[in-house]
Image 1 (cartoon, rainbow, N blue to C red):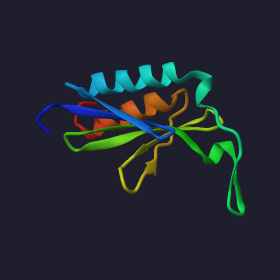
Image 2 (image 1 turned 60 degrees about the vertical axis):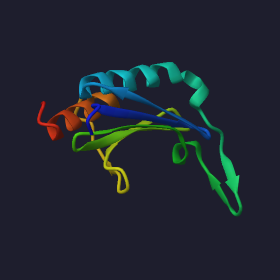
Image 3 (image 1 turned 30 degrees about the vertical axis):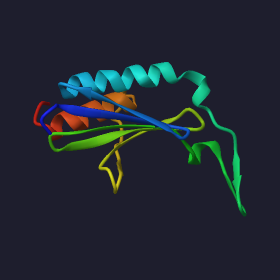
Image 4 (image 1 turned 45 degrees about the vertical axis):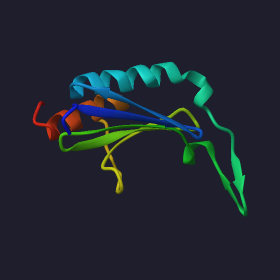
Amino acid sequence: MAGGYTLSIQQEGSSKSERCPTLEDALDSLQAELNASGPGSRRETVNAFVRDYQPDELVAMRLEIRGHGVCGGIDLRGDGSEEPYTGRIRRKPIEPAPGENAVSALRRTLMAQAGEG
């Protein structure tokens, strides 16, 4: 990928993407998007056919970084919780270390994958 990294943001039927020259810039942009999302990303319980989906089961916003052999992101859940992951098709959750938030855990993992950490 010649242009660096791509940050994709998907939220309630809309999507946008941003090109970033470095992984650090992409992670900083991801953090800024999460900070800007605020409480408007919270979701109520949704009934689909015969099942109720609780807010913690719903993805209100997905932020994903791709480029130079790394792929990962954060799912912002309907209850406001954040779940970092790696992978694109098969997402593997990242377990934050003590004292880490979701963005710090993603930063640590992707920087290590890119050989920058």
